[in-house]
Image (cartoon, rainbow over all chains, first blue to last red; front, side, top):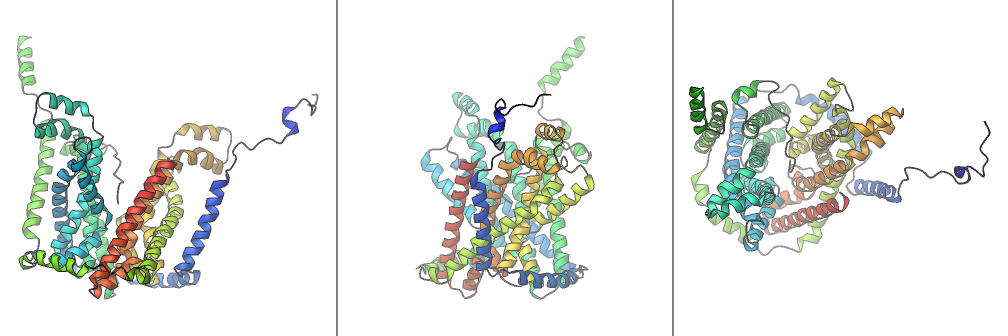
Length: 294
Length: 272
């Protein structure tokens, strides 16, 4: 074969351009990121020696966690039951309050003078961590489960209110207009025009919120708002690490049980499953969990 | 024939949306919910005197918070607030680094070996099941009080969240480009960077931003168990009943959280 002469080959003269050129910005961002990490570590006095000392500690610490000590199971069960009570009541109150507030925040159904205050309320309820809200309620209503219930109610109003508002704003208005055109009063419009469109998503939010409240109800006890968190924190401060381990195992099992139940409820209400379907292995389709908040 | 038609008419007249079994299932759920609410409401320990006292206490709280002690902001709140933001961002970065391999292992289309997938899912589930405050307690036990424990707590709590969502995004990737790359004989690193990464990139950054937003909220309370940040200042002010300082700290947290949310929303809008 005759070699291609340079004059005839269009690619020979200039080098071929890189088919995947890297732009300068990702590199600049990477450099900035590294500089930031070094700066932040220096600011917070994080150094390799500290990590190394800690790792030496870690083995001893983990050794003291095991085996878990279930000797004080009465205290454990009492705390878990209180956490459950807090989660159930806070979810109930939170959902009951969030429904009207979420509806009031929907800009496609409500005038601005109703929707903006409702939206502002939701933003404030969402902004503060439940544990911080719990501190304020402990001051207001004293130590105990009531403060936990109220704190988690606020968190639930923020979370469900936001999602419910968004769900209502995404509905199709045709059905709402059709119901309105029959001369139906406002409540009937809600019941037959809006509710059917958002019900399945609402079940999703509600089960997720119960799950989330269960997780948080094991925590608010750290500031004295009842539940297993107080027991956990006390055990930690007394260095009863084997009891800490037992409490952690109990909390994780409770949360996992809650997730199984939530999956069942979603299957029954969203996929119209029967009780028998729940126990069939392939009966349940895989459903994505909500990830709005965790 | 006529009798069949008649029974059909009866059946249609008594149309119901759900079958008897579906109705039973729904009824059982309602029953359990109502029973749970009633039992919880009856057995929860509420001290009536404390409840009756509440309005007075709230008044007292607001009166003590009132003139908000803004002068304490530059001296001790500001540096703690910056530390909180550092904890959130470093924790998120560390979580991204740690969650990437776990997410890759969890994706069945990428690692078609079920035991490894299950191992990865176990890591993700245990990371998510433990609250960040509990992670903070554990790391305070190991590394002592301070921002290091907080950063690690945020990172370990976020691994589950980021890894799970990243793994799911990977599993949803279209097989077409990947098969095309594999057919050219591309090594696995190229398949990852040119086949999977462009498909999951938007999801990845969206997850990262989302988690950063959550982490800013969470890092504000880690200090209550000694893991650094503004929570430690808050804890100190609470223990000394300095409510006018507590008010400054709460306002500072609120402002930072809202600013973070606005910034994150804007970045998402621009980038995605």
